[in-house]
Amino acid sequence: MININAIREEFPILQEKIDGNELIYFDNGATTHKPKVVIDAISNYYSTQNSNVHRGVHQLSQIATDYFEESRREVKKFINSRKECEIIFTKGTTDSINLVANGYASLLKDGDEVIISELEHHSNIVPWQMCCQKSGAKLKIIKITDKGELDLAHFESILSKKTKLVSVSHISNTLGTINPISEIIKCSRKVGARILIDGAQAASHIPLDMQKIDADFYCFSAHKIYGPTGVGILYGKEEALNELPPYQGGGEMIKEVYLNKSIYADLPHKFEAGTPNIAGVIATKYAVEFIKNIGLNNIHEYENTLLEHATEKMHSIPGMKIYGTSKNKTGIISFNIKNIHPYDIGVIIDKMGIAIRTGNHCTQPIMDKYKIPGTARISFGIYNTKEEINKCVDAINRAINMLS
Amino acid sequence: MNSIKDIEKSIIEEFEMFDNWTQKYEYLIDISKELPKMENNYKTDENIIKGCQSKVWLHADSNNKKITYIADSDAIMTKGIIALLIRLFSNQKYDDILNCNLDFIEKIGLKDQLSQTRANGLLAMIKKMKLYALTFKHKYEHEQNK
Image 1 (cartoon, each protein chain N blue to C red):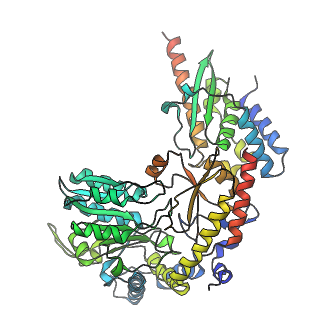
Image 2 (cartoon, helix red, strand yellow; image 1 turned 45 degrees about the vertical axis):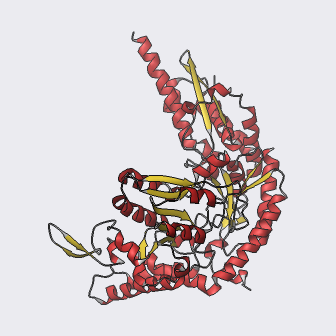
């Protein structure tokens, strides 16, 4: 059992009042709040450790480097990768995907194919469009069913020897669907394609084991796992990462530089050009520890009870339609109410202190598929409660009354 | 015809009658319902204002150095805002529209919600309305110089 009250006390922002109301934060799919240990780690870094990493011989630089590399070890343990060098720190999930897609732009050629799906976030669509434009490869799209699940039969029908890379999300940020990535990886292996999994919506909700999942690349952001913004993680199998050319050139990513050529550094530094977000990376360790202390199995179980409770309560609202009705989903509910624009719901319940997301959630193709302008979305984090869900349902009902 | 500033003043006074956000929002919802219907043939891609979370269509006509606007939105709150803007700008002179600085949003106490952010596109709406005024002004001047 987890003690939600004790967990809530670790998040200073939950004490904030919004127009005099207690903050009810249901926009965790966009970003999660930060526990005090993470906030303190950032402040502590600048107060006592600030120095550039991997460069200085002086003590502060060595201390900062030690903490920085300790974060890498902690992330390695968190996702159970084989080696520390398989953990690359980036700016975020978007940056991680761009790093890989940019590399593939020079590896792929005319006649090759890349597969993504209809339910991807724009950051797992646009980089591949750019990659295909540059390389001449063709982009193929896995269709989704009305329930918001990947159509695996369709996937198998478009998978071929031409497929060089398959990039799909672990969990849909709009629909909450947990995609059958083990099936997808198994099929992709048969044709020898590399696989990237966008895990932005998974890393703080379900346990991850890179050795079991066996993807070639797996990306997620610190800010969605109770850590700071501006830090992303790119996990890549050593051999898959070594295949890629460097993403950016600069300091840190080189072994030797002459005026006419450079010899690049080994992993992970090859992909970490320039001064990184040192404070953010160091604080990420504390976010990971925070999650580990609660336990991802416990988190998953608790958030499931929130999902079940919310789904039931939401169905009691007249005119309610939920998008994404897979049995395999996490705490994300995308919905619309008949004849009401999601934006109106969003601005009205905001006045009652409830933060939700409205719009297309950077997944315009999903909106096109369902032929809707957008949805309202609630997405849960570990500090949310059933009481908050009840208040949210009351607020939505009140908004409906005002609007009709 | 009242000036834009006069209309703005009366809008501020109307909103001052309410003491809480619920009443203000309900008033905005009422205002949205009074907006004259926009025929579907005006709901073209050209008339869509980009930068709003909800769809907003805006069309304008000009006659005798004055502009009339018609608009619609698929979201009620947005429709309420555009209705207020139309009340301010309709039948005003080109230069008055182009030169005005509106600050009623702050004064009616809805700044948090209706601030000039990308999400609700208030700024984009005002910009498009001023763009119409500028276009009609140039057209008028061009015709005068013929």
